[in-house]
Structure formats: structure tokens, C-alpha cells
Length: 397
Image (tube, rainbow, N blue to C red; front, side, top):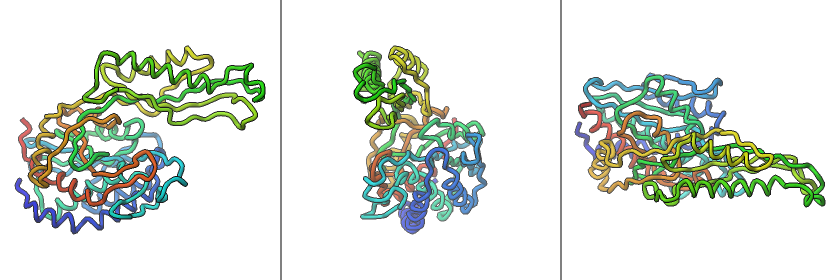
């Protein structure tokens, strides 16, 4: 369906201030894993304000685990392709708040940047989709196929949010995950990821007697070194994965143990995340970590939180090809199609026509001083509207 790009752009610019304020509201609501209900309740009210019939789907056995899904029926959903727009409300935890130049949940706006945990990853994705939906309504856009909306949780961990809404029947012929990338990029592939909680027993003796025992920190260093060596060996001779070289990593994200400097810790806990490339899968990585951990005295590993298989879509799939044309026609920009080292929810979808796009640029996701560039929101929302207007009028065949 043809869309007047000038009228659409005027509409998006007119709606942008409201949605920037909405993003600030969402950033002010802490939504780390286990605390997602407040932000999802706010998003639910916005979807309902737009007239959507929203299904609340739980992905855990607690009332915090709200995932939101809605289907906007097209003219003929049997004939024309459907499109899923997916974003996530959960965020990484905040480390070292005093080191932030803007308080992590203050949602300060300075020089066109909105600062705060989750601003770019991925509350901007939620609001960009909401902006696109509001613009579609205002310009009276009619779609041939269904438009499916996901606002999920647990993307940063288990992926159970997206899996839960898909199990409820909210799939589609094409998928845009609006998460973590710039307006002129589409992501088609990523490394696999797995996380572990490792415990290493120590002997609680006086610091002056440390030479008489095996320090758990020394064994933790030995373990991490062994993991890196094993991953290098497993990937040896395989070359880069979609240009990612080396196609693996080991990150120690948290290390806890001991009570003071005068004693050797009685135990040490270490949380690690491992990235890897095919043909490795999560099960093989878990087996390798378990075996290496058992070779270290007093150490045990437990798979924990994150399990994501490596993923690669065809970088020339139908959806990406259409998105490239939409970005070129609507904004006069060329789209770069690339992989990332991080993880996404793409592996849970069955369609081959999938990618990440938007919500726009920024920095500091999972780090310090996370921010989102507000001027990118209308750009990506325009892409989503124009893609919906073209994709959802394509025959399924």
C-alpha cells in the first residue's frame, strides 16, 4: 500500500514529544529480572490506549512475569503476510551507580540524548513500536496481513518471554526485533551464549597461613584460563563466524567471596558468560564447562540464566531485502546488514524472514551512562510503518 512519506514524517514528528516523555517514564521504572510488572503495566496501558486487545502471558510462576502480545487483524490474514514487531522490557542490572554522570533511573535528557538504564536496550524499542502504531492509526493505514506486537521480558536471560508469547500463537511470517542497533543497520546473526554460576570451595584460615592452603581465587584464575584455552581449541581452524573473529569469549561478570582481608575465603562464587560459534551448541558448551570445572579441586558449575544457540538468518532474506528498500525509499539511506557478538531472541522464531532493526543509536547498554539518541526514534518508526505497509500486502506464497 502506498504511503505519503511526507505526511507520515510530519505525523511522526508531531507525535515524537509524547513518546520521548513516555520513554522517560519507562526508564524511571526499574525492570531488572523479577521486577518487570510496573513497566509492563505502563506499556499495557499504552497499548490499550491505542485500542489493542492485549493478551497478558506469564513466563514464570509469579505475578511480575508479564509479557504482552496483541494481534491487529489485516484485511485478509490468510492471503497476505503477517509481521511481528518485538521488543523487550527487561534490563541489565546497574553496576556502580556513583560512576554514572546521570542517575541510572533519572531519565535525564541532555543534548538530544535520554540517559538511563534500559534507555537504548530496549525501552526505546518498545516506544518506537508504539510510535509506529500511533502513526499508522493517525494516517489511517490499512494492512492486508496481520500485525503482531510483542513486548516481552527475560530477553536478557532465559528468553522465556518470547517463547511464551509464541507458544500462545503470536507468531508471524516476518519478524522485526526492535532492539539494540542503529537506524542504518540490520542484524541477521549472532554468537551462541551460555552463562554459569561456579562455586569454588576454600579453606578458611588466617591470611598469614595462605601458603598452607589452595586459595579459591587462584583456582578461579586457573579455571578461566582453562576455559579460554579449550574454547580456542574448539574453534581452531574454523575461521571467523560471519566476520566475527575470534568467534568466542569468556566474561567473568561477578566474583564474590570472603569477609575480610585477614582470612582466606571459605568459598568463592563466580558468574561467567561464554560466547561461542557453531557447530558448538549450548549442550556441548555446558558439557565442556562441566568437565573443565570438575578438573579443578573443589569447583562445581551450574548452568544459570542464559542459554541461547548461535543464530544465522540469510542476510538476503525477503524481509531484509524489503527493509533495505524501505530505508532507501523513505530516508535515502543504505542499510548495513551485519552480525553481532551478543544474543537475541531470533532463534526462537520459526520464520526465515527475520532480523533486528532499530530502535536507534546510543551507548552504554549493560554498562555505565547508557543513553539513547532521541532523534533516531522517528526514523526507525518510519521504517516500521513503511515496512508494514509493503510486507503486509505481499501474498504468503
